[in-house]
Length: 367
Image (cartoon, rainbow, N blue to C red):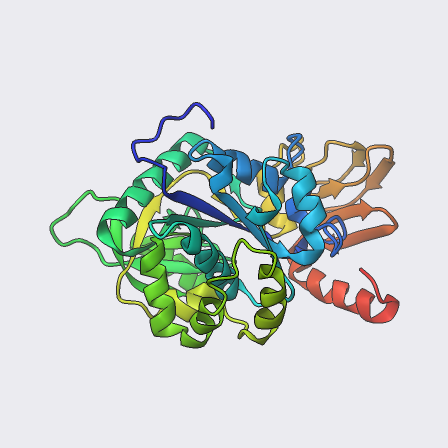
């Protein structure tokens, strides 16, 4: 483990890293065979999933860290995270969103440690203030251990962002300074006007998609709100950590409903709290969000390659190291080259990249 000493005993703390996405909004750098979580997209020398592992390894031993991902990524996960054993890599035979993914990890780990206390996190987020993040996670695990509540991390918004979901907290009338607040409402991605209202109100936070809970707490929630999902994974209780586990998952998983943990449980449960935090978070969901994090030249162009820019500003350029690129008269564009694919797209139209990917797949049979 790292050198940050936690105030919470991590003996029964487990981390589940969700790494099954294909990152199509980062196309063409991120492709089905090697999505963004397996790329060093920030140029740090570590891929996003490796950075996520490093972060949680400061809190808990490597044997308590699990990864859930599509079975086609098994080899790359074990290659990038050699600290993990095969039984710590949970392989999904089909994409079914976050609720089945979390249920699988929960039932498996609880079959080994009934006292498990979980943090569940995506594999591809950016955390700038890691020490603050570690403290928040440690405080959160202590809270879930003692309270029996479901907890999510809410990020103090810095702008009227329309690309994130929001969590509204119940403001404590006594004026408590507690970082834990009861959740009032969840709201999906708002339009700009509503996002401005949320920002001004002061009681709305970005939904980070990072969750904490005791194993038996989330188990009770699955049994109450997603009974069919709970029953499926309960049937495999005697098979987890055995050679029969994967065959059971191959049969059970495809018949699970495709549903997120937010829709399936968090928005329905009456014991959901939010830890209000500010640790320099971004979900790195789009080229635009990456552009916000990168260093820029005097004309707000982000590029660390052999790129010569003339009369150009506010561009993101990501091309192979061995390419020399000359651009003239370009403003507010994304230019990305990877392997045999070149993307040139207006920054303001980047939400269309998913459609571009689908068109390429339909026409050429590959991304």
